[in-house]
Amino acid sequence: MADIHELVDRMRSIRDTLKITNAMYLISSNNFQKSKRKLENAEPYYYNIQYAMLRILRNLEEDVTVYIKKNNDEGKKKKRAFVIIGCDKGMAGDYNHEVLRNVEKFMGECESSRNFVLGELTRHTLVSHGIPVEKDFIKNVASPTQHRARLVMSKVLPLYKSGEVDEVWILYTMLDNGVAPDLIMEKLLPLERDESVWVNGMHMSDWGAGMHYESVEMLPSPEAVMDVVIPNYLTGYIYCSMLQSNCSEENSRMKAMKNACDNANDMLTELEGSYNRARQAQITQEITEIIAGATAQKK
Image 1 (tube, one colour):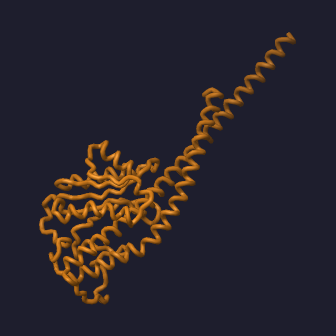
Image 2 (spheres, one colour):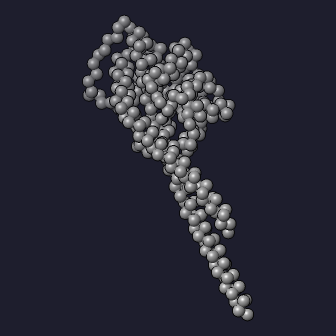
Image 3 (cartoon, rainbow, N blue to C red):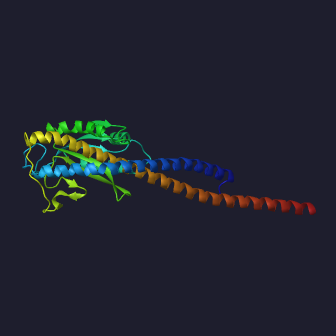
């Protein structure tokens, strides 16, 4: 059985740690609520830009612009640009390692990759595993803004237009039913009329045939219209993905701190039981020694 002083020191240490994890749980809980409100406020915009893109794509012929292509070479490996949205801070469970595992998986499926990383800790993790990072945007994940999303867009869109990459993908996390985060990998470019657009969780091909879609004439040309629309579309998409990831990160951190608090309380309960047994054994021994001494004096 452990020494009483050792047990007291361990319980004191765990209580000090519990104060920290409990404070971090409260902070992450507050941050999660703020992130969730921002996401709820941005979701109408998020769905509307996708709906607007759906309307435009329905009125475009195939291959009229560089942004819309049909994938005729399924077996060919592509040159891809990845926008990877991770986290700036740790202590969020396996959140960051889950991002890393999926990045390694998707990079193995392409010929080459150009990686644009949002999140200081994610950048450090990728570099430490030998994954090259072309450009990082640190300190952007915790406070997403349209301006920061536009900076990311301005780096990846020229690569696609110049032909340096064949596809642009984004990796981010989304809360599944508001509880567990799911990693999402979606293609941003090129847009494919029959499989790339989702509106409010519904696939483009699932939208009812009876819905009214007006004819849209694009002036001066479809290419000129798309040159204006695509940057705004990508900016909005990246911005809302940043909000989703931030919300998922804070939720993971909140759950990790809650688990840490629960584990600390369980350890304290176990150590207090050990302490009480050790203290009782010490008291019993002291009483036995007193009785033995008194008996020896009588003799």
